[in-house]
Image (cartoon, rainbow, N blue to C red; front, side, top):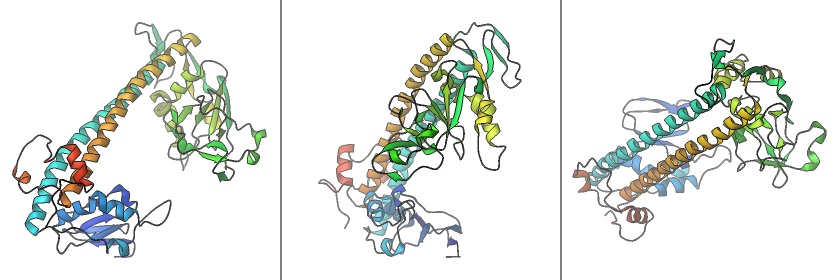
Length: 388
């Protein structure tokens, strides 16, 4: 240790004791310094790569995670970790295990990387679809005119250019929340707002008797919440039926009285609004921040209400398709990561014999056991082989 950092050398193994359920371990090939949240280990009886995989095994991670202290930033102690028992194979078999896992987890990692790349492309496609629809409409043959705004370019000839403040009212939520309780009225915070959706799973609750109702904090159907400060300043989401009646926290609430609220909700998620206006404004302050006057001054392209409805319906449908596809890709990533963890656990605990498998140079993603047997072996079921 060197005060606020730990020194390590090439060949040491680093293990993250903060939130150990994240299963973070590495074997750097250089000398350096690291956070004190990383333990520096020098495995005397372990091949260093074999030790890294042992630390990443599901059983070890769960054991260490069960010992953590602290609720917001759970961490494990060296006193506990240092007394944990790990299986040690003979040196030659350790090397075989590490080589096998390097090869097989590498294949899995490359597949995961490709799927993450696909998710990135889907997000780009989604963002482009939204921006195109709310700046050009759905008719590719519509006549265009200069918008009068250099960065915006041409827009459909029959569309108007308005300020957001002329399309509805903007008010603030409660600010500092009343005391949170287990049962009560849901209280929507900035952290619950995520790119057009409100995550109800982690919503906090407050007592109705502690709410200053005179401040009009209750959310109505089709109100739009806009994050007011912090890292997600400018993020927004429309209030759906399951959110109506909840209490607005610190953020701003837009109540649309001219036009179609779902269309305006899509506008607030578009690149022309976010990158062209909101992000530029929030960066003017020392800390990311947006107020009602600034929000109300932003430019909105405004087609007829009938066209607004058609655009909103189109985006609901088409982004829904993209979101469902992205969710399937995320599920596939989850399954691959599950396979990876099971494979590591089965190999380092001797439930599968890798001594012959490591000699193979197959380029296909094949395991020495089918998935069902692999998962059984990883969990300590029958059919596995134990190290001597």
